[in-house]
Length: 269
Image (cartoon, rainbow, N blue to C red; front, side, top):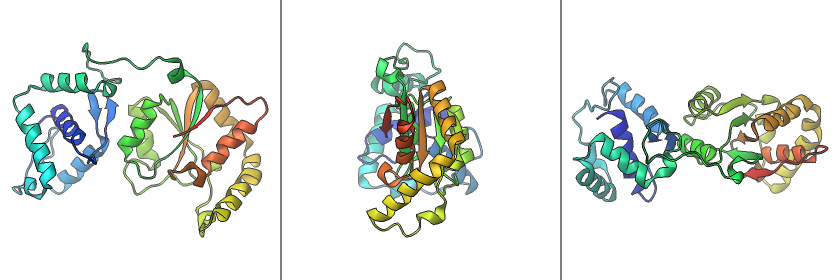
């Protein structure tokens, strides 16, 4: 099966799942899962798939038998409904039923939709976002939906065991989506300072120290953030924690708002 067809069928399959196995990003040919391609590379390594551009199964194992009864039913319905569809028919079906995934499409059809141009979508907003609990595709989709133009990584050490969130992986994926990336380690917190944070008082002590002692001596980095915000109008700072109250990024946002003549709108994603 070719890549485009596979992505569309996988997308339609996940749309029927209560808890989707994969998340998708609006990309060049509609919905796309970067994580599925990482899985494909792993399956090629173990010779489950051939080392080709398309998706070709190599081993003889019947993986269908390992699916849950619910997923078997979903797959059966997808197979029956779309088996005789051509690639263009599947694309048209996806584009007409899920237009929000076509905003970055290079396929010029009357079904693709243009990027939003509402005032709110284009207005200047400083976002913060954590990736805890997110797949890389879900995370990237959030950035795209909010029209974020630049992502500033405020982790001290931008390394993650989770696919897509280490510095180079994240930067390369963002480039594919025309989103800028900049790592600002000076605004991170050393990992040893986050040990033994058991009570809200522990977090308050850490963040108050960060706000009053770390940020004031990092004027260059703070001013860099302000310049990036002025230039791109919609930027986001990112770290790990899902809840911004337990992440130093909310203190960066507060510090920016405290600056003289600041008129920065903050949105925590």
